[in-house]
Image (cartoon, rainbow, N blue to C red; front, top):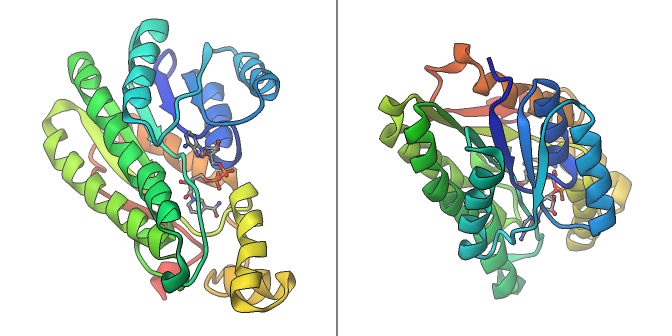
Length: 259
Ligand code: NAD
């Protein structure tokens, strides 16, 4: 049922976004990739996805630039003939006490993690309405439901993503379009790897202690979430069986936000 549909996945040159692009391709979904990286390395990833039997196109739009986001959706429509699924996944993190938090980092986190999703949805919803079907998946975080210290911008952005998700879900409910947020706990990706270093510095503890006592402290399974688990949940949200799941926040967090 998903074969031949087109998904735009922001931030799909690494981590969760790349894993989703690969899993979606395996389900027969054409992929519009986005994200930063070395052109030659991105081309290797694009070809690998194409090798899974779908069309794969890359657009290097910067998620801090609304006009580039609009152009990305227009290009996706021009190249693929339409857009059926958007996954707002691009994201960055910065860890610092609030009184030392650089204002430009605040703006970048709000821009990429929250506002970019608005610009994507704003451009893609008319296309989905015209096609009579659509899926919006916002990769939020457990930090959309609960806070941690030193992550004021990230927590604010991710809480904002949930509010945005709910509002859009109501607006498009009768257009056969769903809008949901996935809220992963700690997934082992480059983003988390960077956080280990920064959190160790901010808290004055070792990197091993950050992993054991900070990151996995809240995750009751004591296991990192996998990229495949997030990708599989996103695919489920794209399926027909999930048609009545909308405006939801779906935690994949080893029990973190249940406690
Ligand atoms: P990652 O660093 O591996 O990937 C981030 C992606 O976003 C990359 O492709 C990067 O190039 C892209 N990106 C960054 N800035 C961009 C910009 N201005 N324009 C376009 N693309 C840009 O990180 P990840 O862990 O895969 O994170 C993906 C999403 O999942 C983020 O929204 C993150 O907040 C969320 N998340 C991650 C975890 C985790 O533990 N890794 C947990 C919960 C939520």
